[in-house]
Length: 581
Image (cartoon, one colour):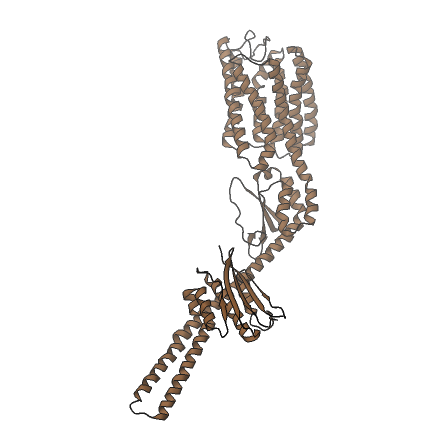
């Protein structure tokens, strides 16, 4: 590659000098106009060489170099030599097609849109077919567009047809500079409108310069058929400025990418003080892509997950997103989901991810830890749910089994007691009466046991009814202040009920209180259950008060339980349980 560049630079300079001499000699062009024409070609050539040197795999640099040489060679069509005129008149307008091709291929070096590819192909065909057709019918007596009073001889002359030459030239100008240039402007505007913010920032300078060139071409096509309202001098310098802006805009884009890679140094400094959860934002700033997403590989679960450990579905062939996979020591580490425009700057992604490698590893470990914590929470919730299901089963077994059999036995004893009334036996009667009373006590105890395991009223009628029943059975005054009217999720109602039930039992056993207040209210998607007493205080969760299991039950639902119980007196138990909107 290096020898090729060493050959292209002097070749370009020599060609520029030759183009300048031909213009001054043949056109008697002023020095400033000749210098401007040469400067246009050299600007494309030099910008293309820089782009080609920086990214040899990208075709854009080669296209720009070809456009630069074509623009310089185009000036040789003004030579007095018939062969030089014929050759460079036939091929000279390839420069316009190469310039348009370069603009549409920026920044990847390839024209990806189907309509844009069609436009490029038609453009190349037009700049080859029309000039060749003109040369078949042109001789040195026919005027040519852009040549002024100069006359040149065509070596391809078949038969002189002045009218045909005039018609072909006007059709050529209308088709290439009118129709195709207008379509070029439409396609470029469409690309700018539909591009992502990052792509738009990269594309805007070059494509706007391309629009300026195309507008100049459109004006040229119009002025072929109508009188020019502007001076030829004005149009000439418009064309020169627009053509110079194109390679300048390319260098601006390359400089922007270079500065972005330089900012990776700032990223390294920033990552030193960035916690794992802030890694995405830091990378998004370093890469200049606010839409960036990061997902980490969790080897135990064989999935990609976000920073919270939740599995992430990677995009497929979506046109607006691209995926870059990162590895460490041959093992998957993470993926970046980003703007496809970043694929045109692989060095930037490589530099940024290399700088963030350690931070990415730490963030992956953090995500893995969060995923494991979520699994623990899910496991604890399943345990609580299974315990509640087992409680309901035991309650049903007691109610439908032992309790029903004892009630039936009590009925049979009462029936025997009534039959013995006809032949009274005081001892038997007393024995039966004692057995019936004992059975009733057993039934009441069994019913209370079933209610403690899991009250049927909670399942059938909901939290409000269950709390009202709890208050009515309390051995001391209890005020039920607020209860939700609507039904909540079964696990939420069960947790709230057992908080109230255990809190009340704690008051009865330990608090020596005279009154208790229970409330259950919804606040912004959270059910807040409070049990407050005026007892002696000093209650602790781990103090053997029976409240330990409530912490697991409440936290398994994503809530929290706190106790305010100063030794000076009074206890307040508060459970906050997420219950949805």
